[in-house]
Length: 72
Image (cartoon, rainbow, N blue to C red; front, side, top):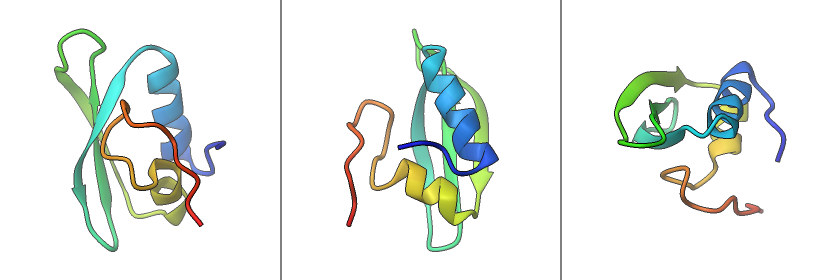
């Protein structure tokens, strides 16, 4: 899945660089994702977004360890 928003592109770059992420909060209008280091899981930053593109990019995953699933 290709990123469809600036936030999704940022998350994709983060994981491509070896970083991890986890969903902090998920509501019908906002998604908050913590950007974590690759080694210790220390939170470095957060992405807070209400765009449908970002929500679609993250999908039903709760962290970067979960595989991308096609949602229909």
